[in-house]
Amino acid sequence: MTLTIASRRRVFLSLVKLVVTLCLFLFAAQTLAAQQPHENSQTKYFIERIDLIGNRSVRSDPLLALIRPHLGAPYSVDAVRRDVRALWNTGFFDDVRSEVEDSPSMPNGKIVIFIVSEKPTIRRIEYKGIKSINESDILNALKDGRVGLSVGSRFDRAKLKHAVVVISQLLAAHGHQFATVKPSYETNPSSNTVTLVFNIDEGPKAQRSRSRS
Image: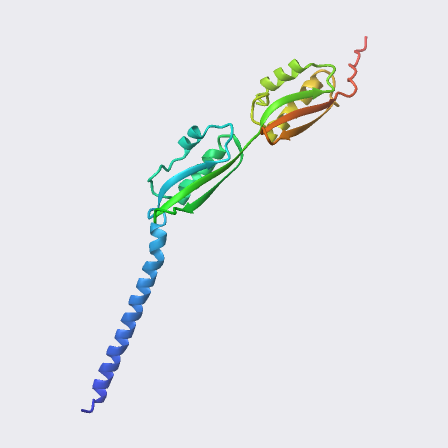
């Protein structure tokens, strides 16, 4: 049977509509597939285990209490980042980072690992070269200045710079405006401790100007 021109046109238009419909369906399916992992990336996994590695003198329990996700909770990249910041803000560590591993036994389980590097503890502080002041004067000045640098505290380079300023000001108040304070430190990796040494050169004492009679 021979198709008329009108019939051929209707068949052609039907095929075109079918092809367009299939293309739209495939595009919608691909879009949904691309969005699905993003939407479920925060919820389809759960936390099977949380490990804390690297802490030596700082107990694990208080640190783990700072971590928001708990065992069995949904895994969230943003939550892990917040936990890294929370551990860093304790002031105990020079470095905090996280790693996430797939569970070897649970298909959707995640193992979250926080790796920390503790700041060393100050074991001893020495002040060399002081003459016009004594160690108790320095300790009182550091306390009044709220430096937070003392034996038994965590070593912090920012606090070390603050201590240099406070000691220099103390020496200036005793007439040594040109004094130099140079700190140095030696670490003991086995005990994670540090010994601080302040090498002080008081320099000449400023002469008081005499008032004219």
